[in-house]
Image (cartoon, one colour):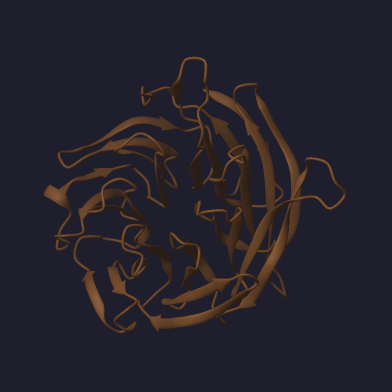
Length: 348
């Protein structure tokens, strides 16, 4: 069910709902636009929206122009640390913003850049926070990984190593074992690294299963042994990290388009949202036995790149968790807010 839509100012490639109370209504959307010509440039923006599906509210309240952004991530909820937004820039910078009330008073919110540092001469393609928000992993276009410490208003590269042969599209912390970082690349390899052992010491590397580049990696928030990968080869795969030589019981599901991004449902185990590039978006139920497409969403007319679930519950009255989704597509610059029609509601 469609709730609202709008067109962004540039090619849309990432959307992220804030995980922090009371800001579950805040949606960040990023763009990346290549300006071709004699002096090509990569421009972008971050837009913040107020999303409340209960009352049909979808309002832009803040926008800032940036260089081209490949990825952005809100910080996880930790203690009294407020929400921060990390962005991976096309110019090799890692930037971190804080979500704050505007200086002129009132209830309006804006982003304040806390720190921005050039960490590589290559492009920053992906970004992820460790669970304690003390470090950030960044995947680079030359196949390297940077792990950056973050404290107050300072970031420092503490490890960087050549992890893959081509562009590194996924570099994700293990949320249960944050000393581990998983990486995936255009070289079709899926790897794991232990930050305690030195960057050259692999925990594992699988180069046989993915038939094309690895685009995304997402650890299950509930099962410490389960992890999902997505690939240009159009398959979503479930892995047991205790036996990484192959996916669990070969569990995989073909989604009909390159699986660019996957997001676990914040409340319902085994349900994921996938951005499938040339084949729209899919809500997938996946377990050790099989993977099943529950619903597809095809209201976008170009590459499906950005996708996320909104936290919080849609309706307190019926005491049910429901699911609000934001998706964006690249060339048509479209941002959609919608609610899946399939039954993925968890009663309290």
